[in-house]
Image (cartoon, rainbow, N blue to C red):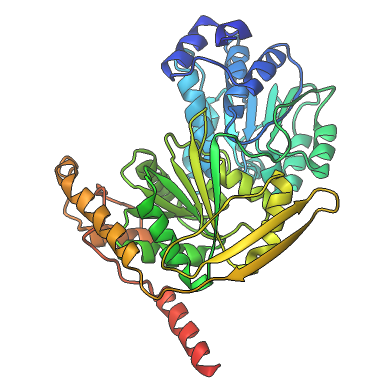
Length: 479
């Protein structure tokens, strides 16, 4: 089956072809015809299966038949994060390039005045996060009584972020006669309740087993001491043929510490978390998506819905606190039929979280060991009957040097030196590498022209990072 068999117009088919898509995914095959028929849809499909196109393509087809009025948009797409809203907006604009449809991105971190002016002119599609939309509604800048299509995307992520009360308030302002499209990666009890409340006789589409991981992703587990995690990660990056990779941490302070550590070790890295300004977040993602930056250290903000082409690896520097986040994190790679690899670095303290992950995905994660670092062999058996795991940990000998790591690091440096002529193709501005990375650390707007690697520069630890290490050292002395 091709996109031409789904009932889409020739103009949409041309835009899809130019976006280099030829065959629809399973969620697209089932959802698009139902949406074109005007049915409510409940779509449950794991991340990376093409849910965005499954609702944007038929929406373009439906909306192209009429025009909007000032302050009264005809469709609303709700997203849990700014990044997802921006990505959906990009997809919509790409697919609707041969249609005269307008969009408005209503997200935090951008000018309310600009958004108000845009809304006053009238737009066809509102792509919003719940918080900013409610702010605009309270100010009287927008009306929702002409909405014909409502899309609630990443519903389970909305639930996790605590947006459900906001969404319920927004839905009360919409016309009762409308088409509602509800998409989620998992189907928890609360998600089912929301679907029953918002949808009328929906077509239910279940593509994958709940919380399964894509077969295109090779998964690996490394067990080590907590103090060895930085070395383990560095060595994995050196050994693996990493094109671009996401490195996940559980909290902002760990992101800052790991970022400084990787920069000091000579890696080409950048960081992304929720406390950064919107302008910096957009620029950071752009640098990473274009391949200028090889590694991006981030929180779960980047784990859902972001489509980054040719992402070869995902590293879980911290085991996620919630098992579902593991599925969404590693789902950033191995997308659209391409292969990917994920590595999770764990300690003995992560036993409970690992057990929950294995119970959720229904299979064990292969254990690998790293030479010249303390190795622990761990056997995790998943008991499908009582959902319990037995974890046996045995300690092996510790070799105190890291010559292997140094050799790998030296080899990587030499390879990058051989490609030095590629670096000269980038425009250099008056800012030095250290100045640019300091901007990154302090979340200052304006990157300048970011150079492609930081191998010959080291960035001093931030004050809060230094305090962390000093405090840790003092605590050890007291003990």
